[in-house]
Image 1 (tube, chains in turn cyan, brown):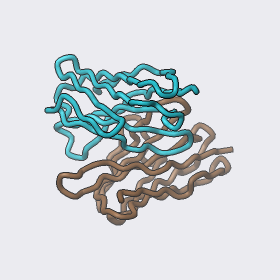
Image 2 (tube, helix red, strand yellow; image 1 turned 45 degrees about the vertical axis):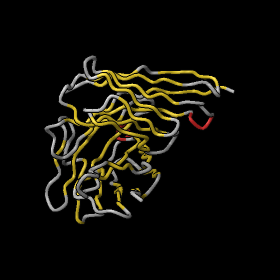
Image 3 (cartoon, helix red, strand yellow; image 1 turned 180 degrees about the vertical axis):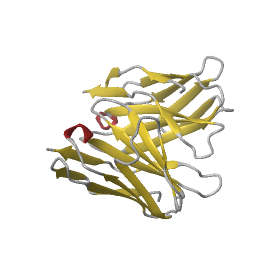
Image 4 (cartoon, one colour; image 1 turned 120 degrees about the vertical axis):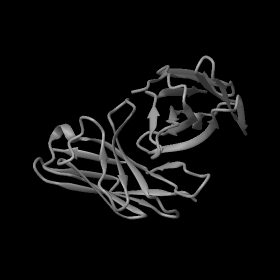
Length: 113
Length: 117
C-alpha cells in the first residue's frame, strides 16, 4: 500500500507556532486531511485540502501542500495547551470509491507553558 | 452536526466470550462505515469497510469470522468480536462517511476500549 510518514514528536512552547510535517507517496491522492486525537478519544477532523490547492487557512490553522515533493504541513499559530494531542495526516486515494483513508503514524504534540 | 457515537465506550470481557460494539451516525446517513483498530501510541489500522445492506470488505490479515460486521441500516453498523482473547484488547474506532454529494467526509466515533481478561 501507499505510505504516509510523519515525525513522531514535537515539543512547542505556548504561544509559539507549531509546524507538523507529513510526506505521502500516492501522487493520485485527491484529498489530504489533518485529524486531531486527544487521549482516549476518537479523531476530530481539523481541516483538509484538495490536491489542486497549495494552501488553505482556517483561523489558527494553515495547511501547505507541495505536490511536487508530496509534502503536507500543518501550522498552528499561537499554540495553546489545549492543542496538546496526537495529529494524524491522512490521504484519500483518487480511485477508491469508498473513500478509504491512509493514515500516518501520528505526531504527538506537547505544548509546554 | 456530523456526530458519530459508539457504544459502549469501554468494555471488559472474559476470554472466550463475544462482545458487540455499535457505531451510529446521529444526524446523517452513512452507506459506508469503517472499522479501525488502534494500539497504544500507534496509528489507526483499517480492519474493514462496512456497506449498508451488503457484506463487509475486510483488509488483508483481518479474520472475518472473528470480527463480524453488520451494517443493517444507514445509521448503524456493529462489530462483534467473537471468542475474544487477550490479544484482541485494543481501542476500536469507527468512522461514518457522509453520503451527501460534495460532502463525502468521514467522521469518527469516540472509540471503544476493549479489555479481554
